[in-house]
Image (cartoon, rainbow, N blue to C red; front, top):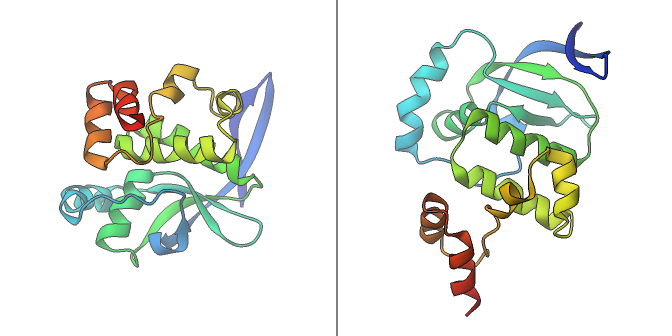
Length: 180
């Protein structure tokens, strides 16, 4: 493994070791349940296969599990179309809590501009795991409170209404209707 400067924090270089490995999406753990339809995944499958270089950033956790850090779209497409296909990934080794990992996945959702459903799932996981503590989530993710709140929709709201609520910025209205 070789080390490269990864990030500067207060004038200090943090060095993260990495290497490229070939693994399949079925061996990588994520925290979301939603996957795109086969038709949606098929549209972008060839684009990802033509890319030169690693498709995802993966962390090899202390117990040998592979945890996805970046490359949500690539992971989702491969999981739907060909979960056994081995692809190149950047592999790092670091220790983190499940809460930190979830926050990192949520931030990846934002930088990668993935489908809203993934952000919703990760915000809801963080809210559940922190006991609805938005201050702790803000500290972990760097998000503003209103960014967190816009993904908080009652779990009993049907999926099609959640999507409409996000598209038209009417989460509070949908939540109010659900409570009646």
